[in-house]
Image (cartoon, rainbow, N blue to C red):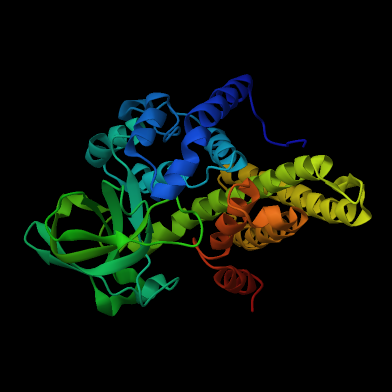
Length: 380
């Protein structure tokens, strides 16, 4: 598939290297991680050792200082090779940028080297049991007490919730101020009053650890505040563009994987004396899927270029998050159908692609929330 992105020779070498890493170090063990419902910590450290985490972090903070295209390559290869439960894109390109953009020099020196090496795993805690996608409705409180803040509240559906060593937590420091009363804090593993609930067992994306987090009189130093008091909502909104672009890219790459798996299967599978690929229904179904995937690829690559150029594309990224996640679900469902009964068996990768796809229309903003954002952009 022709790409419009300006990949250099260095980018292509990086992709070749990382693709081999995924094939050799992740794919053979992925079913074990699915069964255990968690990816071993050592995988993040191994990725860090090879320079595959936080590829954008500047050299002074321990990173290689690469551009966003390196992040694109990592996200694509993880999804294309069917190991999307390895949530390094969340760590590297969704959570770490909060520290990189809003952290003080001291905070960046303190935390980013561990993020790059994989010794420190990241999560972001926004969603609450009663708030869902409505960030302004969060109830977690942070009350100033001397040179500390005392946090009380709970978060749910937190990706990397079990593994995380640092959690960027959204809390209200001024409940009367609405969205302007939200502040971000970095809460470290082992902080008294910070507890994790049992791991949440999901219908898909099993290898990725998801948990509830609880904060009871959790005392956090004021020096762990990120971005300034009352600026949390603005920080979150500013970073949602990249978060939703990364999610869109995951949907696109996974849809491409579904098509690849199915094309290989229908050419080998024989039914009624001829290959499944020889039936017009198969041909038309895969032609329709391929057309949607090609449209998605052109759209997401265009958005990547605009994002790299620093453009405000919140409206367009919301469209991509909505359309591509729904497209991935259509592709996964229709591809599974062509596998027949085998598609319903866990030993076939397409079954995992189908169940893993379902959450894409839910996290990082549901399809309904994306449509609301899009409609507002239309002046409605």
